[in-house]
Amino acid sequence: MSEMTLADVSKAMGEIDFAMLSTRAESGDIAARPMSNNGDVEFKGDSYFFTWEHAHTVADIERDARVGLSFVGSKGLLGKPPVFISVEGRAELVRDKQAFKEHWVKDLDVWFKDGIDTTGIVMIHVHATRVHYWNGMDDGEVALQSA
Image (tube, rainbow, N blue to C red; front, side, top):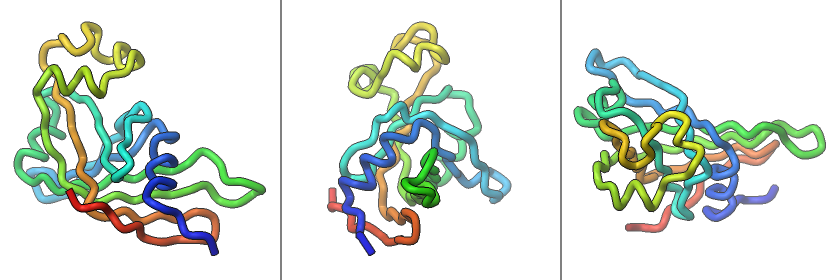
C-alpha cells in the first residue's frame, strides 16, 4: 500500500481538467455542475474556477460556502482503476481582476471572450478542508496544511 502525499494529490488534481463542484441549493438539495480548473491547483489542495456572477452557483455559495469537489482521473496504470479524489472545502467568491490575472489561462477565453475584462465574471476559490483519495486499491486522507 502506498500513501499519497498532499503534493501527490494536488498534482493529480491539476492533471484532471474537469471537476464536479457541489453546492447546497436554495431548496436544500445538492446541486452539482462540471467546472474546469485548467490545472490551477495549489499544493494545499485548493482549486480555482471561473463562472458568471448570475450563475446559481454564486447564489448557492453566498448562502452556504461549504462545497464539495469530485475529480476522476482518465485512466489507471497497468489496468488499475483511475484515481478518484474528493475534496470538501469552503468557497470564497473573488471579484478582483488582479486575482483573476494570477489564475487565468488562455483556454478560459473560450467561455469569457474578453478575458479578465469580461463583464460579470467571478472566480471561485475553494479552500480545501478535507481531501480523500482512492488510487487503484489504495485509499486515504491527506493531512492539510493550516492556513
